[in-house]
Length: 120
Image (cartoon, rainbow, N blue to C red; front, side, top):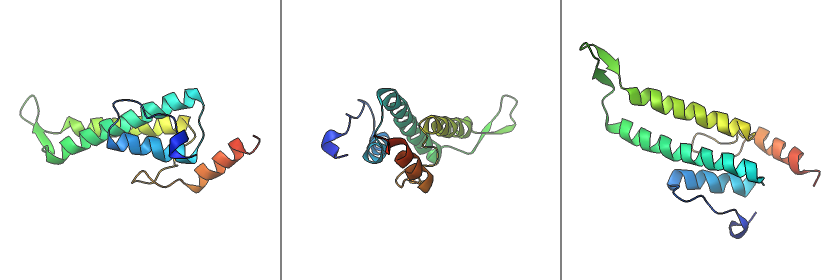
């Protein structure tokens, strides 16, 4: 699919979300319902990037309510966003379609796409 024919990127997406949107749509054709899930995944990628940027400068440990050390709650939020992203990508059949940098499609993802679209 050429960039001209790709569905429009949802408004409000930042760099990481836009990159996910383009990367997935350059390799896969999607129905309308799948585009909604992809938009949700792209928003999760953006939110995760913002949380991770904040976490880079935040302290690892914070004082708890009784003065005890406790892990910064941003760690749990980043983890929750990563899990949510994995679930959304899994719903699209793309759970392992991206490498850690968010660029390369996996062998399983390519195989799934070929099987899905070979009858058309």
